[in-house]
Amino acid sequence: MMRNKILFAGMFILIFSGFVRYDSDFYFEINKSIDIFGRVYKEVAINYVDPINPKEFMLAGITGMLESLDPYTNFIDDVHQKDIDIITKGKYGGIGATVGLRNENVTIVDLIEGYSAQRQGLRIGDVIIKVDDTPVNKDNYESLSNLLKGEPGTTVKLTIKREGVNEELIFNLIREEIEVKNLSFYGFVPENSNNVYLKLSGFSRSAGEEVKKALLELKSKKNIESIILDLRGNPGGLLDAAIDVCEKFLQKGALIVTVKGRDSSSIKKYYSNEEPIAANPKLAVLIDEGSASASEIVAGAIQDHDRAVIVGTNSFGKGLVQTVIPLSYNTSLKITTARYFTPSGRCIQKVNYSEKNKVLLQNTVQFQNEFKTDNKRKVFSAGGITPDSIVYNKSKSKLIQRLLADGMFFRFATHLYNKKPINNLNVISDSYLIQEFKNYLKDQRFQFVSPIEKMIEQLKQYAREEGLGENFVEQLNKTLDKISENNFIEIDRFKDEIVSLIKEELAARTVGRIGRILESLKYDKQFEVALSILNNSQLYNKLLNANVH
View: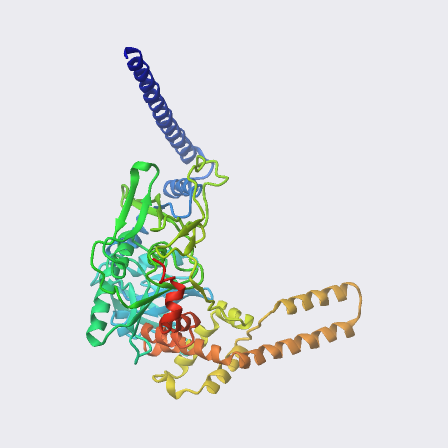
């Protein structure tokens, strides 16, 4: 007996001393590395042949270090700290305009109704030349947010260039407290139906409450028979917000997500803690490659519990959880601290950043590939959320894809609206829009270079090098002319789709973002399929394997 005790004590000492040795080695390496890193930084900053910017040099070192991990682990300096506050608080001081780069111009691409930018007459398509006395362009675009945002009540001056107006326009805008709306649209669509459409664009703190209020408001008007929850293009946000949204649709007590950290002691399971406000209506969820993070938590939980039919294309595949750690000098560190797993147990992370990475120790976590939903349907890990019904919205026309990529529909709508403001899209004929669009493409000297055209241009070059003669080259030029003419024929071939894209942009200028969304749904294949599934109970139940328990 005594011998066993001695053996046990010996094993305990060996095991414990192993942990101590590992910890002491690990922390010794950390301290040694900090010392070396600090010495290198100091020596280079002081002794390098040219003067060093200490702040930028430090940022370069931090950025290089974090780039060896994953794209979601980032250092957030004092300039970008406001962006974190927007996600966590859901509010910021600004003018109510969304700005983007269009043809290398800093351009207003959306306006939030009711705020100063929209009230004082800014238009979608306006190009920002200066903010206060600071010229803005593509080179300092990254710092533009810091120039536009500020304390509510303060003034910011925008110098604007507008198509069709010769002189620059000056707008003195009052910054206001902008409340970030996660739910960019809610209503009955089609209007005379009992189907609710919810367009959820983000997951800041108030996402779940916005969904709840919208459903209560719509319930007071008439009975809700079905719901389409649109998560397309939603990049995610807060974990708590995703859980809150799930609670509106899943039964109380249902597992929503499991979060697993670095070791087994940091496993957290999150369950639905409230009675769902929308437990009974049939549900469809729309996703695409832009649906990530919190969107995938919602879609994954709803799919695993067979609560909805998922429609669209595979989601982004981000199964990593980040934590924001405050640092000194108004900076912070956003660091990946865990993976999340859907209720069936799958991790939908697409990219394994630990593979062939010298910085990371070998990832010993093994994930199985196939899992089962509550109704015994097969679902899979490691590639995002796969829809139950795969539907593509991408145009079949290469010409339309190129026009979209070049922002031609946006630019044409800006041109048309500035030429003659349009208040009612119903009075504009499709033939008028198509003809005006063709004229605009000619005026802009838009050239669609197809793969065939590229091959012919190469053939022309080879023909000259081989001395095949100008007659041969001239024949190739005639072929190119015919192909160019065919591009305009293709506009007529896909005119319905082109008209819908033009009207979507015009609606944003006449009715705002709600108008844009409603117009886009008229030619939305994924929405159309989701609605048809909801209207067909037999198909809906079959896709969910609803008869199996």
